[in-house]
Length: 77
Image 1 (spheres, one colour):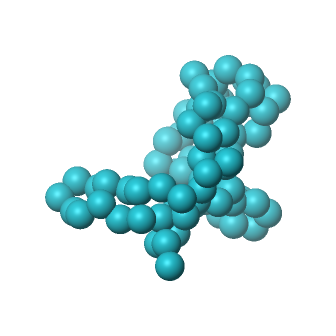
Image 2: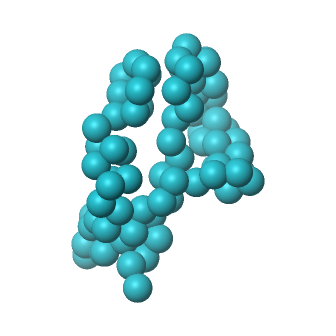
């Protein structure tokens, strides 16, 4: 998240402009994906889940005015 500084990190700006990517998970073959920013209910649901995994997240996020992008990777068709 850009070190929790203001603004969006360069990796997100690049991905936003060019959403086709390749995901490489440990022990699996690389997979083509397409990224999109989660908004609305989807973002709220994912954010709540992330906070369950990382309880300090809300504190970090509250230190900046830029809303952290929630990025979803879907299999490329």
